[in-house]
Amino acid sequence: MVTSCHIIVEGNPVVVYASRNGAPNRVLPILEPFLEKFWQERETCGEYGDTPECLVAQIVVRFGYEICEDDFSNLRVGVNYAPDVEYIYFIRMNRQINTLIPSDEYRSNPNLGIKACREFATESC
Image: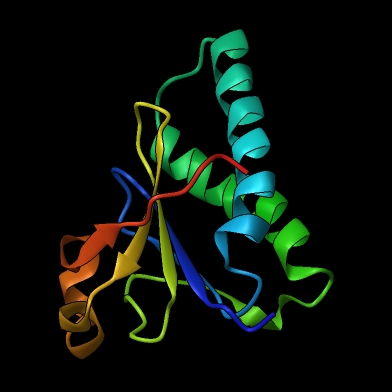
């Protein structure tokens, strides 16, 4: 499925880009349990420092493997937003995930980031 997406973590400038498999019905069933385990591990270890950095690293390694299906050519990490993404998943430090849809304003100037997106109403998949 050719649906691109970004994954953004609050408090970290990194922009994770996947060029396919980015629809909510594909991402959320993987991302939600992944994040639940991540938060549990952080609590168990009592480790809260560098959480945004740790989360981005684990998304790239662990989550990336699942969404890329053994083909990592569609996964990138950088600091720039792509104009072609269909969805942006914004992970907040309060443990919530916001699924966002880029506006026309975003498409013409992706540097606006999530400020130029609107909430996509989804039910948990």
